[in-house]
Amino acid sequence: MDKKKVLIIDDDARNIFALKATLKAKGFDCVACSGAPEALALLKTDAAADAILIDMMMPEMDGYEAIPLIKKIENRRETPVFAVTAQAMVGDREKCLRAGADGYISKPIDVEKLLQLLRDI
Image (cartoon, rainbow, N blue to C red; front, side, top):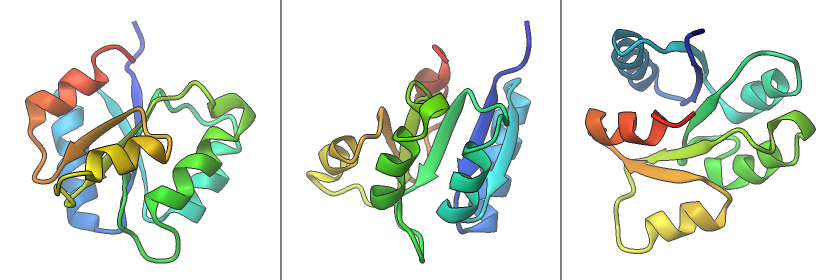
C-alpha cells in the first residue's frame, strides 16, 4: 500500500518541521507550503495530497479564506482539509467547520488526536 501524502500549509517553519517529523515517523509522506497562495497553486496541479493540514492564522491569506477556495478546486472537493490552529477558544472549532474544514485540531498538537483525524484518509 502506498504511503498517504499530507499537505501541510503553515507560515511557521517550526510547525512544518514538527508536523513533518511526526507524520513521517508514523508512515506518512509530507509536502509543505508556507502560505495559502502557494498551496492553492500546488493543489491546482495533479500533485498527490490525500489530506491537508492548514494553519488558520496566516498572513496574506488565512485558512478561513483558503479552505473554501480549496474546496472549489475540481479534483480537491473530496480531499479532507483539517484546520490546525492555536485558537482554541469556545466557538473556534465551529468557525473552522463553517469555513469548510472537515476537522479541527488545536495547537499544541496532540499526536494521537492528529492520527485519529488522519486514520481514514
